[in-house]
Length: 120
Image (cartoon, rainbow, N blue to C red; front, top):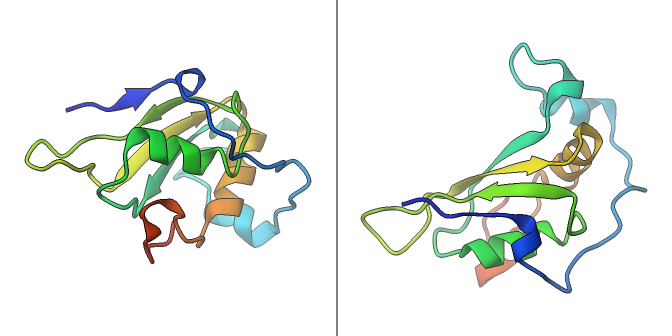
């Protein structure tokens, strides 16, 4: 099954200002795609998502790192054999700067949903 949603369909009280966060050169290097210039990346693949995490919970987690409107599409595929997701998602951000900031901010952080010890 397909579990996608537009960010404008989900609201959450959880979001933080992220524009003041800085990125080290090493952080920027780590998020580059193969043969893609850094300025072309607006879509991120996030892995290690807790399997029982719902689309709403996932978007709530994203809103801790970026305000509503910073991303316009979320794809969290469902496992067709179980009542869970596949453990990964794709998120498209409005611009490359936001994608870079969110990637750097989330990298290595614990997921807040479902009280898990999994890291992004």
